[in-house]
Amino acid sequence: MKNPVYLKILFLVLSGILGILGGIEFWELRHYKETVVVSEDFTEKIMLSEYLPSLKGTWGDTPIYIYDSGVPGGSMLILGGTHPYEPATSLAAYVIMENIEVTSGKVYIIPHANMSASTLGMLGNAYIKYYHIETQWGEKKYRVGDRGTNPLDQWPDPFTYVHYPSTQNLAYQDIRNLNRTFPGRPDGTLTERISYAIMELIRNENIDIFFDFHEASLMYPVVSTYVAHDRAMDISMMAAMMLSATQFPMKSEASPKNLRGLTHREVGDFSNTLAILMETPEAFIDRVVGRMSEELMLEGKDEFLQTAAEKGLVYCDYDINEGFPDALGNMIIGTPMDYRVGRHLSGTLEALNWMNQFFPDKALSVTFPNYADVMTNGSGYYLHDPSKADPSRVFEN
Image (cartoon, rainbow, N blue to C red; front, side, top):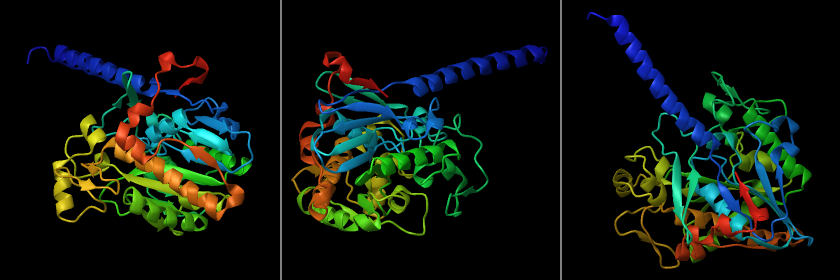
């Protein structure tokens, strides 16, 4: 080859162009804003950094939306987006935020518990960057994030992650996993500080019941399940039985005492709240599925996962051909987004119902759409048009 220098320059220029194009996509995802129109019962938005000032100005800071009835009653905290690549969790939080009515007590909602993790796709997995929800007035666009904090915000990972304060050794990448860093510490990594700030919110505001929304692989045993701290087991068991009989299949599991860092264990151990985590089935994150498409994210239909189900390798109902019936007579084909969002909504309402019965001194009165509503109308029906809303009720996340 006569001109190897020119060839090298050409490759360098092409590499630079590709790097710039890739960088633009990363920048757009990191700075994309989701819009929410809060309900008329909304009272205040504050930032998580109010509970730990060192978070201010970081990608760990995230909005907290407060709905205070002004009437004495219990208090509730909902986390969506602990793992942003489980997007039904944030979408369920948005549906609640846009439609909730609080007649007694106080509700706190964090739609993106790990804001940093929502600002990139899961590296190496060919994940889509966004998904879209059809509404009565148009299409809404939402981010699909990663499982852990963005490496731009917390790096490097250690060889072994030593959980604080238990000193249990966990996988190195779990140091960026918000659901492995509770109860956190004020001078730790960014993820540990997010955990600590959430704990400070729970302790300072005397939160009575705590929900951490999640989605799980269908090949993971704790799918379609409440995972509850010891003090919340009676609530979760009764709620699971009622949901299974009247709406959709639901299980209940006790929080393991020997696995540290998870919300359902540490939040209960390090505060007085009733801590419950919920898992819905998300085909998109199963390892055996094919192309990682928006259709798979929204509909949850995959031929490889169907084969796994036929061989008894999944831990919940799954059928992409004829579907399976819920207790209301709906045929569930795959794991559609509305099914997953509805499970979180009714899972929360049913657990609240039993908390009110078991702990009348903590009674909290709220209403928002439930599973039947979303299965009938779709999630998008409950998302409001920001262009026609009162500007004081429109926020970006």
